Image 1 (tube, rainbow, N blue to C red):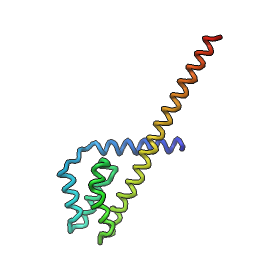
Image 2 (image 1 turned 90 degrees about the vertical axis):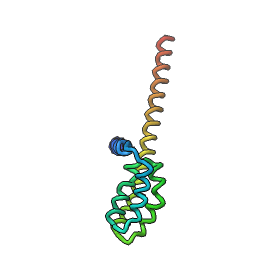
Image 3 (image 1 turned 45 degrees about the horizontal axis):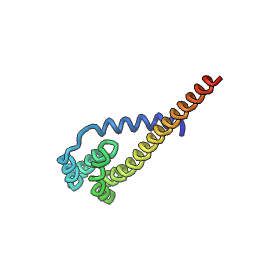
Image 4 (image 1 turned 60 degrees about the vertical axis):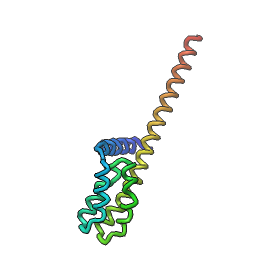
Amino acid sequence: MSKNHRQVVEKKVAQVEQDRQRPVLSSDIQRLLRDYESHDERVRAEALKNSCPCHVPWDVYAQLRKSALRLRRDPSPAVRALAEHLEEDARVIAMMEADRERYIERDEELAEQARRRAKHRSRRTRAS
């Protein structure tokens, strides 16, 4: 993966983590679930925006996901698009978080290899 990809991943994941710091109460979850059932499409759309996994922790998103997915069949094209967007964001964020973990693991592997090489060089220098 490219250096640019890593920068994009790290920036996006950091932003997501910052956004997820806001506490989500059970009353917030219940309100969102109620808003999904609103007769007003603007209320349903706003509830979906506030349910995005880029703004709420995965455990909260998991609680909302099934109800949010039903809105993919909503009469409003805007609500349907937002419901699809939630799923797409979930996929993208999950991939970016996995990429970041791979970068961290790779950094750790490289650091360990460098330590072993330095240790080996140190032994050879002392032996000479």
